[in-house]
Amino acid sequence: MIPLRTRATAVGYAIFYRLPQGVRLRLVRLATPTYTIGAVVLLRDAEAADPGRLMLLRQPPGRGWTLPGGLLRGGEHPVDGARRELAEETGIRLDAGELTPANPNAVVHTKGRWVDLVFEAQVAAAAVTPVVDGAEVFEAAWHPIDALPRLTLATVRLLGRYGIGPAAP
Image 1 (cartoon, rainbow, N blue to C red):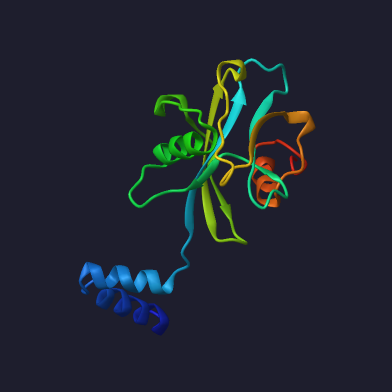
Image 2 (image 1 turned 90 degrees about the vertical axis):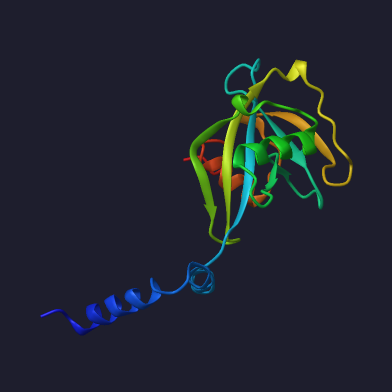
């Protein structure tokens, strides 16, 4: 005999899947948590000796350094969002093929309910000059991985997933 709870679940699914797709989608959005999606770039100096250097940003309110990145626009492909944010925040323009998904590619920030899709790239620091707008970004600079400046908590946690910084295992 099938337990009552299992039968009730089966009936619930049968009703749910008979609803129009738009109604089902609205119900799912009401019943499940939502996350904001961003794209972040781990940009390394291709010419730096080990352990290397990272491009970091000092943004308002300026209490710590962060990685280039930001929110994806509706319908924007993550690699395109990463390229756009890097260009907007640093003036450094890369082709999509120059960015590779990091491993792990998605980092879930459970406290803030957002997901960062992380990409890696390398450029010769001597070949690029970071340009910032002074409003969204105060400063963009290369920092040695073994001597990072004060980072935001979210950046500490994210870099730790890649074995970098104070939260590295």
